[in-house]
Image 1 (cartoon, rainbow, N blue to C red):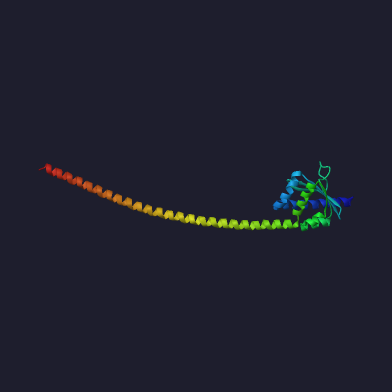
Image 2: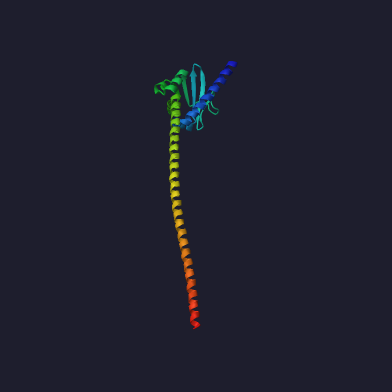
Length: 214
């Protein structure tokens, strides 16, 4: 009894790790998400019967990911697809992405569902995870390079804009000085004109007074 409980607990721990890995793969690999989508749309349940060791695992496809359990999901009387295989055969499929290795697995169920599961398994595997991670890192490097180039371009644009504004400021300063000079000249001419006018008026008054006194 203790041995059975221990085996069940160990299986649950393994399933949690595998489920987390599948979730990561689905996030990183668009092709894998595309292969899983029709299975998720149908809510496909796959029963994986392994030999050596003898274990049954149920995989339920949903829009949240692939849910793994040691028992058939509630509300279901039977799985849609049943896979009978040795653990080594499943390992070979996941590491090789080989259709020949995949065909060695015994699959029973609706033909369309079986084909969809095969497409998913061909896309799934350690190689897929490695490729997805490499693409992700390369994408990040590329994005970083693009961001760096964009920042450099913005910096150059700012420098050009500052230079243009400085030129405008210098131009406005020169025009302001010219206007100040013009205003000073006008004020000077205005004063001269006023003085000349006053002098002319005084002379005119004196001339008039002198004429009247004759």
